[in-house]
Image (cartoon, rainbow, N blue to C red; front, top):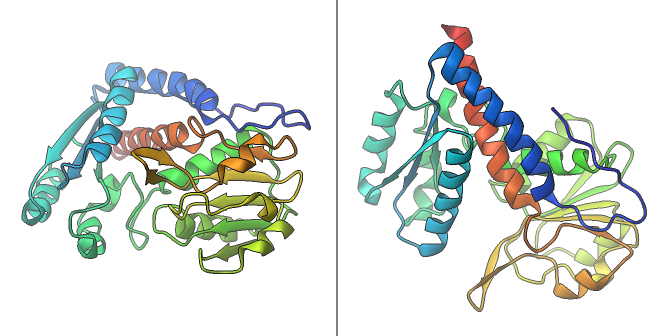
Length: 279
């Protein structure tokens, strides 16, 4: 079910939270069907080796969302050396349909090795680009957000700032596979060229990187970056952009984030539905 919100010259804020509330209603119905008709209790396992309070907050958000739609969320907090055996055990459990590795890991250089251990049919974060059966959650969320606000991408000049594994790289693959005209910038590139683009997605984690002179009037800007500044989570877009009335921009809170969580749980539901079909 795709929710469309009128996109016109008076619309300035791309509110993902509003769209997520509609998606959550649809997901709750799907989960009830899985439980009642197929006797499947959807379960997502989150594997982490971190005690970072910010990461703990993200995991609690997922637990609350899961509780709202009756998907159980199991957090497996283990030492780094125990990650492989934990993931292997979860792969073998029939009562776990989805597994995510909560990033960043305590030893980031092990990320590729660890995420490859997740079984493809349970890789609901879509992090293993070589074997996954799912689209990564944040790029999915961005596409939902743009579609929900009737932002047409075909024929537009699209820019992605950042080449990260969670957003930039998979979003580029998805857009190119759709035949879209997309240019990818690294944060060290000449970002003044962004002024030439109609739609900009930024996800570098560099606070305030995108300045007002980089964004043309009428542009659509999706800020998927997260950084910590004075104990506060901030995005890539400089605060001065938020006083503008001539661009369309995600809000500081309630932009891509809520839809990313929705997309993750959509993948969990899809994993359950595939299991039903296999049976």
